[in-house]
Length: 497
Image (cartoon, rainbow, N blue to C red; front, side):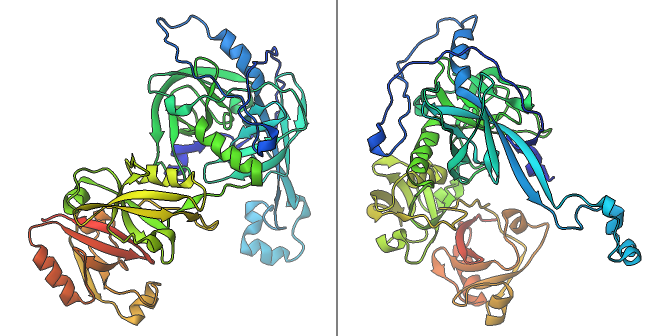
């Protein structure tokens, strides 16, 4: 297990054979539901969001917890894993010398069954009285059998209505009526410092409640999911809490617990939850068609660093820099080009690429949007009609990070042979980086052998002579390079040394 895997732990994939009995008092909340059965969406209870001020911290959350516990369930999943005949052998029997000795008469007693059942445990939240339950995709991913354990000890089989790996949200259904539910809060109103309670089944010990505060909102760029807008909390959550509820001091759902930042695999005070607003939006898609259909503009996005802002004459470091544009995509059809910086979406300021990606993904294909872009020192408006995100796009509107330093490289003219060697498209132009000093600033910047430099300060460079001349003209000023790596382009700002 590498360091990244150690740091980010998805909470529901614990191999536990124990199914815990849960016994708690049933107290169901009463409220109105936000949709009707005729609308095609699942009706859910929505909190009034009436603001409350806590002059002094209450001495107990028992009434809130008592009302919330029945709406949080444990999820028991079973996955059948197939082994080939040799994988189950004791390690020394896999040694070629032993195989040569035994031949086809390998000791049968050393073989494991060709199929094994792996058990996992997580949590879920009842969001509709007719049996709809929200959880994490990784809790039920690949499961052949899913059971729901309720607060009163009952167990029921559940089916998957739909799942969205890009946000790690899944929707389950059990055939039961009049179940207790948690009301959805408006998670956009969550503030750092708010009290938060996490409810779930950590480590399979049984239904558990922990308390903390909201440590941060809008957490992203963590590499956990494709679309990230996490609520961060220090309420203790552990493996098995996945899919469980993060509620506020009024007992309203503000998030679905999803992951923890940990080097040990246990709670270290940094947990992440998918905001209730995002989870509810994903649920709406899943309830209609079993999948999420997302908007798409067809670009690769980079962060606007202070160096890029200076090089592009931007007033600040806010916005999303377009590093690449998909040929024939919505952005290309609307006239967006590499180097444009998107600063507004439908009149709302764009803080960074993560925010832009998230907002676009929550819009329906065919939606017309107005983008304000910054190009060559001038702001302009561009209208774009969103397309549908391709299902095989694993890095939608991907955000790439770049450093600002370059030295210690060698470049050569790009030949057809080099293009084949580095697996570049046949029509790629520019100069190819053939050598990078491992101890150089260029290596620290992320440049590597096989990168193709296509522009310097927006001027095309097709030969090493043009590259040297362009860098000479840059002089002591920062140089902006357009770099092609494997068919995707992005900008690198080269500061004067």
